[in-house]
Amino acid sequence: MSTFQAPKGTYDLIPPRSAQFLAVREGIASPLRSAGYGYVETPGFENVELFARGVGESTDIVTKEMYAFETKGGDKLALRPEGTASVLRAALEANLHRQGNLPVKLWYSGSYYRYEQPQAGRYRHFSQVGAEAIGAEDPALDAELIILADQAYRSLGLRNFRILLNSLGDKECRPVYREALQNFLRGLDLDEDTLRRAEINPLRVLDDKRESVQKQLGEAPLLRDYLCDACKAYHEEVRALITAAGVVFEDDPKLVRGLDYYTRTTFEFVHDGLGSQSAVGGGGRYDGLSEMIGGPALPSVGWALGVDRTVLALEAEGVELRLPASTSVYAVPLGEEARRVLFAKVTELRKLGVAADFAYGGRGLKGAMKSANRSGARYTIVAGERDLAEGVVQLKDMESGEQTAIAVNEIVAELESKLG
Image 1 (cartoon, rainbow, N blue to C red):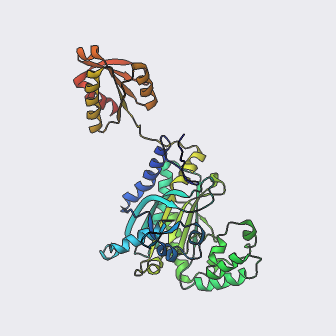
Image 2 (tube, one colour):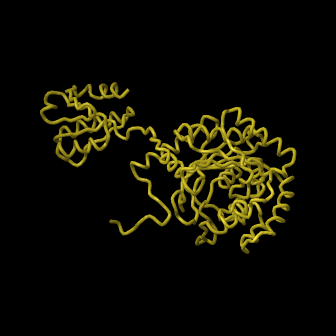
Image 3 (spheres, rainbow, N blue to C red):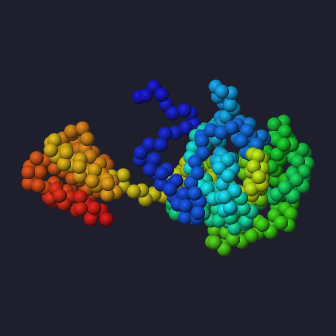
């Protein structure tokens, strides 16, 4: 056993399970690519202030969970705890918003880091696929992203998830609600930290998962009762568009999400098969985030879906993903001449896009055939000195057990034909 182990709250992705994660990433990304979203990749760490300003000084992410450090040069950096602020920063830095084609539509995939108490479905290192549409205020854009996420989950075979939907208002109507909520919270039996949070951002208290807090919030004022006419109309249009697309959702007037930058549309994807960590993804509109981090006014909307939790949700439903075979053909050489000949054939097959592997290490027939069986290959090519003297190799169908002699110079075409 190695002296070292993966840090607490992290995990290694290794075969065969890693293939599920790759399939989930591809399943989520595929609808985005077909809807005009281009790929963006940002550094794993950013300036601390990017997240302090964007995510919010009062959030648990910034105050408790962010991995922050100072470099030898004195720069204060943080491992990225979420993707939106980084992607928006990258888009602004590259002036994508000035190229005359708004919204800027981007998708990304990567690892994120939060110092949390590890438990099933919650890790200190986790993987997400996200999408951001930057620079347009249009309910159709909000609807598009919700529909694309729904499409992605359903394409993977996930069925038992729910979409929760709410509106958080805007800078016109939210201040009135904020004051009403603060007045309500001041009358509750809350600890000092929670009361302090209520003064900075009272919506954060609604997102508090502690039962002692939640049971006091039953009579809390609801934001939907304070929405201005513009926000009401916007929200109704989002609801109408996703309903027309056949996407089922639930109105959740208490949904606020855990980040300060959300405005108007906010949504969450939950799966009841995951226990307390039921959220598998979520997002919303963040019209003021660009200005918070020093950019121009750029109304935007986006989401992030957890790869880890999506895999857990699929497992909870018993969904088996259709994974491409890691090996379709396995070559077993018996002798040096066969080694050279079959290695050349394996290389040729790979160039044609056929997944092929080779019995390395000079193992005997019995050991090599065990490896061929474990590889999951549909066909095995076996050749020894006698076969090559006759100009053939033996092709074995690993499902039926049938073995056929095929001319050496025809084996590649034969396999390509059989595998389609």
